[in-house]
Length: 195
Image 1 (cartoon, rainbow, N blue to C red):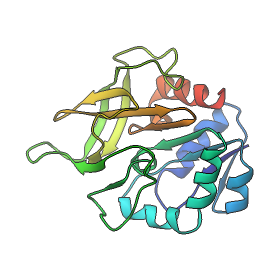
Image 2 (image 1 turned 120 degrees about the horizontal axis):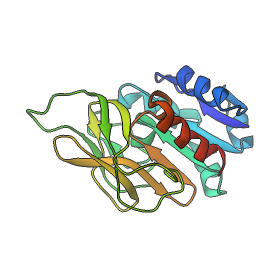
Image 3 (image 1 turned 90 degrees about the vertical axis):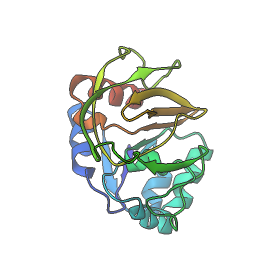
């Protein structure tokens, strides 16, 4: 079973519907015990980084313990940003610190939020992006982004380059929304389900 962690951020139901479409058993949960027992974990999210305070409050330990045991983890949008040390959007809210750096707002003069379709540039071999064409279009809606870091497997250019997808061992993250990215997004989610 895949645990979809509900910490009060948006877009939970779209992720659940996409996984159901793929025939995958998934459960939306706020329960630490369910998270601890899951075969895989997804932390989706649309919204302000301060929503991660709820994630940190009761679910941080079971999520990080599962990651440490090798359970595959996928963070989407704010869920990917949580993998970093934090975000200047909510400096008092810590991230998981699994990737270095702080997420930051797009530069002044760049239309924000970045909403709509944009290309990904695959920069490294990736299990999550296996079979996805370099230059494939994916769907975004965000105002904050992470720089290109060690662990970035795909970038997107919008007011400069930022991390579109990160990957290390059993940890995966996408700034874009695979659940809203048509056939490309479904293929990415299927790759995650098949890990």
